[in-house]
Amino acid sequence: MDIATFRKYYDLYYDQLCHFLNFYTQDITVIEDVLQEVYLKLWENRDEIEIQYIKTYLFHAAKNRVLNHLRDEQNRHYLLENWFNQQKQEKQGKECYDIEQFTTLLYKAIDQLPEKCREIFILSRQEKLTYKQIAEKLNISVKTIEAQMGIALKRIRETLATASFSFLFWLIQ
Image (tube, rainbow, N blue to C red):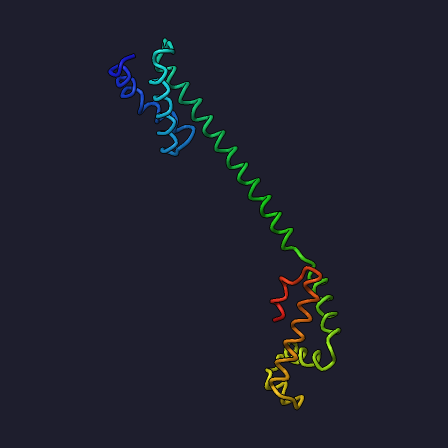
């Protein structure tokens, strides 16, 4: 097959093949890629293959190529979806913690604080008082409140860290 014959087949059947492949996919980019592959394969193998009916060859080759493409695309989507679901499960597994266990451990850590430290922490976090309000209520300095809160937060952080809940500590800070 020479270049003139090839060009003749290209011009004669290209539009018909586009219309034919449109039954399989409406994606013009896919259709053009498939036809490029079919014609390229025909040109590369022009000396090795013997084609009796060029139209039949082109339509069969185009159909097979588009079906292979659609199958591969479906497999790719399936694999990506499986990968995505697996990643989602792994992430959920890492982020899924028992909030009741965390709450129990947090209250236990608070209960283990020294009495004055615990009282200051509760006034600050549960009653939402400012350091100044706590200092006035307990008749102590704001600096003492800051120091006691530092001690409370450090001890609670240490307790939660030993139970792998340190990442949730920011909830109470």
